[in-house]
Every structure is written in structure tokens, then in C-alpha cells.
Image (cartoon, one colour):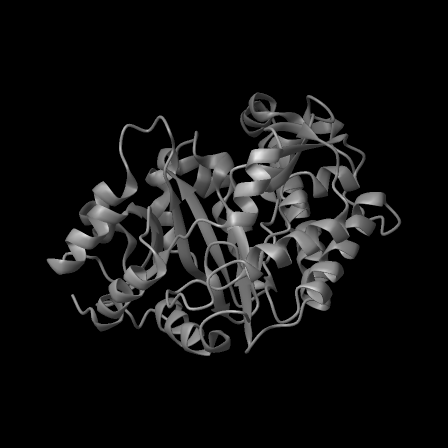
Length: 361
């Protein structure tokens, strides 16, 4: 890799975090502005776009990471996320019209689809067509990222679209929730079938993207030991814990059981699910995301969340001033990867990281 002694020291620290041995330690990413992404944001508007040239995207991310300061000594690892397939891949494989959306601030181009139907009986049979254009695009982009990014960046795992998340993409949110209430047996049958379909797509990733030092790159987790997938419970954020236990917990556990673990993410409006998600075997960490209209920031509730998560590592965003103050006062919670915004220049960030590496709560 481009930075930090080929990443070996960083991987050792991340292994400490995800093996839950860093209960009194802190870990941090010091976000630095990137001139390549800055130029992209100045050139391209936000909004709908076409599926991009995959070779051009692979080369773009190579330029991004070549421009990133090699001397930065934080806990980040360079990897590129296959964001073009985040939500649109699975429904696109089954006939949905895939739409691409550009976010110039981080240069991501994500995918979504319009619903294929309005009722559970409208859902298609989950059969993987390897000649489908979206499957061919998925495979080609993985291989291009792997080959063009070799020695510069890794390829991040793809968030699995399965379970109720898949139902929502196929039916729309309201119709998916109605289906759970009106057709619970048919819904659960589809949910489990979607887990097996999602497994096929994850296996394609691991068959083409080799582990690095025995681990998997992740867009949020950075790097973690083993074959690690990314999962979410987004569709359950607007439901009760009871509904998650009825329709989400066991299918999610089944999906994770096929691999060495999973990185999860939960948004502000899904924090009521935290204990149940933390209790699922194989969850190696949870990224807690701040929602714009939540009225609070995750870092403001760490005392409460610490009592609820057990020893499951968390990934949270935090402003520099708050992070620096808590670091000096030894008030940072352990087993947490802090994504520090507004980080200072590299020299000052490295001085802060010296204190982070020496930190013990």
C-alpha cells in the first residue's frame, strides 16, 4: 500500500480493535482533504448520471490514493468501495431499471432502482443470471479495481442487499412494511431466499479479490482479519425491536455465519436496535452514522452507548476539537475507531496520533 509502512503496523492495530482487545485503547482516522476529489467536486454536479466507465473509475481512485499523504500515520487503510453496486446490483440482476446518483463531495456514484412491484407476489424468483449486464459489470469492475489498484489501494467489500433491505428495494418501503404485516410467511420466505442470493454475490467478491494479510478491506472498517462482509439493518430502523427479532435477526445471523464476520452500520434513528445487533454472533464492529435531522450527534451519547454495546467495537465520527479535548482528558471511550473531521495538517495529525497510540483510558 501507499502509506504507513505498507500498512502492516496499521493492520496490527486494527486487528487489536476488531478482536476486542483494545477495550482501553483509542483508534483514529485523521481525514485529510484530497486534491483529486476536490477537483472532481468542482467539476461535476450532484444528481443522476450514467453508469461510469469502470476502467476510468479504477484509475480515478488510483490518482486519489496516490495524492493522499504517504506520511500520514493514522489508522486508515486505502481501499475503494464498489459503490456503483451498493443498492442497484441485486434488483438490476432481476430486471429492475438501475439509476446512478453522483455525490461530488466524496466522488461516489451510487445506485438505486424503482420498485418492480407492489405486492409480495410480484417479487421475482431469485435466480442469478451470469449473462446479465449488471453481473458482468460487477465482475469487470471488481477485477479492474483489483488489478489497477494493486499496490496502491485495496478493494472494499460490498454491503450485502438482503432481507428486508432487498424487499424494500423491490417493493418500495411502504409496500414492504405492509407485506410483513399482511403476508408474514411469504415475506420471511423471500427474506431467507434473498440471503442465499446475497451470499452468491459475496462469494463472487471473495473468489476474485484475494485477502490481504489474511483480511478484508472495508470502506468504513478499513481492514479486518478474515473474510468479512458488510451488512446493515437500515430497513428496520423505522420498525420496532420486536419486528427486527421476528423478521431480521435470524436471517442476518445466517448470512454472517457463512463468513468470518460482518461489519454493520446503524444510523441515528436505528439505535434502538443496538443491543440486538451487538448480540449477533460474528458482528465484529458497528459503524454508527449521524443523521442530519436527528437532533444529536453520536459522539454526544457515548456514555449511554458504551453501556449498551458490551465490548463490540464502534466506528463514529467526531469533530477535531471534541476529540482532542477528550484525548487530553483521557475521556475517549475504548474499542472505538474515531473518524476525526477537520483534521489538521499531516505533521500535527501525526503528533496527535502519537498520543492516540499511547492512550490508555
